[in-house]
Amino acid sequence: MIQESLTNSLRYARNVSDVRVRLERRRDELRLEVMDNGDATRVPSVGSGRGLRGMRERAALFDGTVEAGPVASGGWIVKAVLKLPECSVNNEKQKTAKE
Image (cartoon, rainbow, N blue to C red; front, top):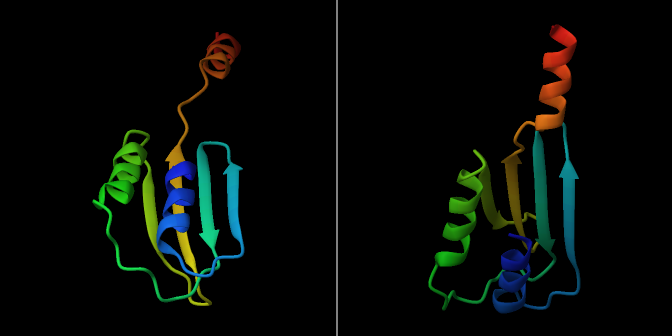
C-alpha cells in the first residue's frame, strides 16, 4: 500500500516537494497515511484504476479500509486502517492465566 501510494504521487501529482509516510501501530490495528503536497489540480488519470481498488481489496483481507482523496490545503492523502490479528503468544498466556 505504501509503494502503490508513492507510485501514485509520482505519476499523478504535480509540483510535489514533500511526501510523508506515517505508520502507527495501535493495540489492535495498524494505521497508514501517505500524503503529498502537490497542486490541488491532479493530472488526469491514465491508469487502469486498479491501484486504489487493489489497496481496498488488500485492506479488506484484514477487515480494514482505505480512503483516498484531495487534502484541503493541497495535495493528496491515502489513509488505511488494518485490523491486526490477535497474537497467538498473548492468547496462550491469557489461557494459561485463566486456568
